[in-house]
Length: 251
Image (cartoon, rainbow, N blue to C red; front, side, top):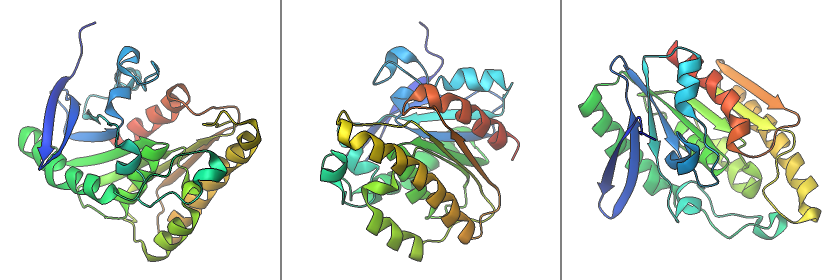
């Protein structure tokens, strides 16, 4: 299959990532997507399920928006998770996190300036799911004036609840930006049957915690979507992604 994007490798010191760029000629804005290998085509995706981002643009007849997919690497769980995981044993996950600042600096100092120089985009959005949702949330608190839309799907605050409680106490968000929060009602990332029900409820609870915190910080342009039967994968994220693209294209 002919790929409708180009690939660049952009580096900051020893920090390098593969970046997939699909920029239509009329695009004056761009959405940066974490886990970029999952953005475009199923055969490229980590679990052979992609967001099919180009199909979403086509479905909404969006021609002013570029998609920038930044591939994740084996350090993903450190790049995307801002704080060390507190509940590794409870949720059956690895002890990761705490190094997101390096990835944030890479986005601000390498990715956005490169895209500015290359394409002259007027504004940016950012979209991520799961740990990528945490990365998007953490970046949102930096209030980069170039980024005016944030999509946070299936965002597991429960991996570091105490740290995120303190984070929200001290954080500040761009009240003029657009935010979309999404979760499914049947989200599971563990094979442990004893943890499944706990995790399902945790994703839903965190969806409401996140939206409540954003509202407390003055955010008005905010969408919350929950799909009761949706699971934790790219197939479930395609529909809210399409809605996010449409709203961003109209900003």
